[in-house]
Image 1: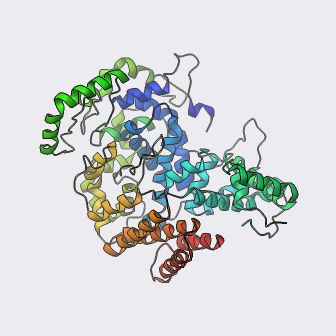
Image 2: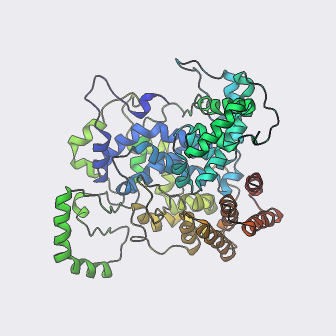
Image 3: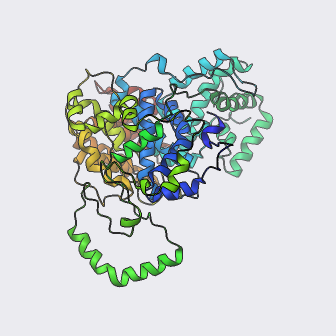
Length: 206
Length: 365
């Protein structure tokens, strides 16, 4: 995901319509305005879904459905607030409900549809080399779905614990606990790649 | 020295601790090298994870928005609760007028009109202003607003090429939607049970509110059976949940328009009960206890439903929340008892999840 995903701008063209305006139009039934909003958030929403379900086909369905539900619930959305976190919460809830379903458990994840690793680390110094990214990706896949959903909403969407709790139907304390357990597990995996010593057994940190 | 910090380190990183707790963590960090080191590792996780791209197949996003649009157009029209937003003063005037003049009429109407998805009832001014497209309509409301629609079609980075004709795009890129269009036949062909998990996953998704959450749970939305399925063999029993998949959307969709209950038609009792429970957000110990009992009652009442297993696990999860809230020894024993009873069941499909809940509970001791 790049900055362009969140606020696409065509420097040569007219200024992009204001999001509040688009959402107000959408709320009045203007599907074209809503399509424009979808274009602005599609990568982000897809990313949230994919990181939780780890399968393109399901992420495709979940992310489309998240927008459909956002459309249907627009009258309950305060257009003065950011649309992105809201629709991502919808997507995360759909994604988690998918992975918790008996059907999803029966399906093995196709190997090639695991979360793709970036090829070029970008202008900033990458924290991890390719091997580190592969290992981290695998470790994220091994988290429990419930831990992964909480982790994705925090690490990628930067939602507050209260927002995550509301989205997933948990106590904030549960969010805190699951997030810690997810991070502790990933941290253990990452240590060698971050130049840290392997963790020693210690009380308190799982 | 006090025990090492665990959860609070991670919460401290997120700025989620109360001032007093935060100070305690900082004091501990100042004198504990081990926790400082653990903190450094925890701190690295999120930025490292953000280096992983969630990449879609090439060209995937080119017509994503138009596929979403198709999907919206294929659904029953949305009934907006408050889509017409006049200035505040006019709202007050209108409200007064409505109360004085229209209320008796509306009252009468509301008792005689039964909402149908094919004949949306829009008693508000929204009927004329906010026109969601009728089911299957080819023309969208935006067609009447070319001026606003235009900027949306401006070429942009994400859309290097003009999107293919919508119909073609739909057929090519979203087989799922195709299935939806031919819903009953297609689903039967593929085995009705294919949608079975969707019955749960889709029927039970809370749409979060953007503002502080409303007192009532967000309305449930049942959704179409669209996820492309790879394994067509596994046909489970045709129970209430299964039966829900094909027609659930049609039956439940009106509720998704933010009109909880207003437009919903009767649904399978298991589906409706599940959805209702899934949207409960307890605020205290007493209501978590109620939720736990209700999940167990659900499982007992719908033993044949595939949702029963999920309900059993939800009851255990509610028990875990009670343990976390410090509800007491009785609730703790109950939580363990429920979890162990589940693990002792022979074909319980979610044992790993329950073990993980039990582990979480043990960590709270």
